[in-house]
Amino acid sequence: ENAAGALRNLAASDANKVAIAEAGGIAPLVALARDGTEAQKENAAGALRNLAASDANKVAIAEAGGIAPLVALARDGTEAQKEEAAAELAVLAANDANELAIAEAGGIAPLV
Picture 1 (spheres, helix red, strand yellow):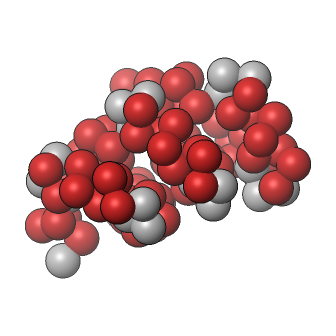
Picture 2 (cartoon, one colour; picture 1 turned 180 degrees about the vertical axis):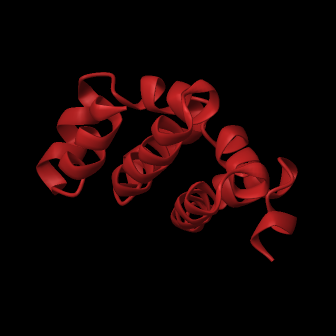
């Protein structure tokens, strides 16, 4: 919970976005967004949102399987999780391949 929250805050910095991705931080955040506690899911979605400000990380998050858990949070999460996941999906959708993957994962309905 605390690690995901710390990464969320650290990922606000452009230099840290690169460092977190290079250190292998995306896959564990995706796992927390899928399987973590309620607080971990929220913090992981927020960290992924911050990381996705980088074009390379948009691709890396999708490649790590991040779209499906974010769609699930946008659909079924707590209000805070829905907000974080919806914001993250909006950022990821700036990539054409991700836009299609979000639609294929059922991500349109929870965002409407």
